[in-house]
Amino acid sequence: MGDGARTRYRKDGTFPDDIDELGAALFFEQGRYYHFGKGPDGADLDYIQAPVGAFRRISGGLVPGPGDPCP
Image (cartoon, rainbow, N blue to C red; front, side, top):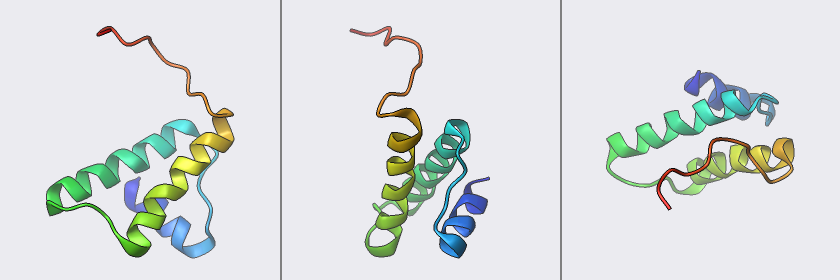
């Protein structure tokens, strides 16, 4: 799923209109850079920022979920 989102974005500049799929793509990328031991830069950073913008567009800026159990 993670590489699929990256491939789709690089092919046509789009992401799925599904919050769960966007979250999975970001989770995958976080794991990728954790494994690399460094943060993204250049085109990779642009790619990371793109699904964040898609989250904002789809959710209207809010992603509903459970409250934080730790105040």
